[in-house]
Length: 421
Image 1 (cartoon, rainbow, N blue to C red):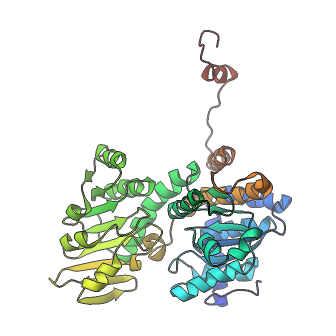
Image 2 (image 1 turned 180 degrees about the horizontal axis):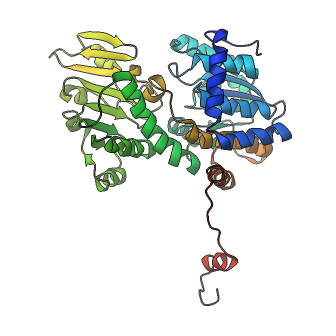
Image 3 (image 1 turned 30 degrees about the vertical axis):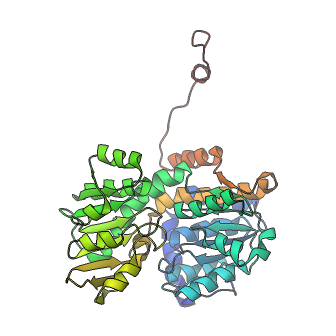
């Protein structure tokens, strides 16, 4: 058991362990990596500092890292996404230093990040770049000891790319988010299902026949639109990218500016990674009783400051469901305080898609440690061999076989002179 931790209640560990093992049943790719790591111990003695959602799926990634020989410290990347029983099991059963409590305030959240940094991590495993940002701002003395890092989500990648462009990024980072076996599945299928799961659990509203407005039509937004359409919802998309807007239109969705879409929204979900996506003009046009929530990483997408300043009353209807009453009597209902609704009000992505995302994390950490001296201080794509390997193992676990190219076909595809080929 780890003696260095700050969690809610260690007695929750039995329940947490049961749920971790339940998720493990649906994570065969990560399990196969864990088995190899146990034999080879590729990260023996390496200190890993992780800032991620403390869920059962993340727990199985942490198990794989421990199996590799690494010393792991984990804090939460979102104050509302921590599963306290999972945190307890990680401390008691797997010897991981965990600093995470569901619902922790901003000061505690920051203190937990600093607790992970205090372990002098050599590899940073981040989800939103909060750990990276703290290292590059208030803990620069720790930077020389960092070999490199990995980043799980779009928001964090954007921050790290900006740092790299400014020349301030102090170590190489692998962009896990843009691995094909991450964004094509985790973002598209995972977010699509888990976001609606969170909304339904929080509100118990019938989705069919209602109008959903989706801000952002990337992999997350398109997956959410597909699932909402399948549940019988009218789908409106708000975009700033003309190509994405055109794609949404060609898929059969209505496309319009946010201020106009507000007049129709029964449910509004932001999935952009930006700030003030739902802002004053939208709130001013919003129909009475509209439900607003966010499935992007940070709580900046919904301008809650505007609501706080303009509302005449704020009422907690139930945990993580708050109603703001505007001066004209209209109400706006915000879920999960504008934080990730799929992790705050539900359990996040299904284990089977996180299996591939976290397989990339584990393998990228191994690659990073082996090749750190060869890498520049910039953001790297996950090597294609890792990405393709994860997909192949996933197919094997599903019992699916595929064709392979013949030597003749390979020669043909690589030739410009088809007659000679």
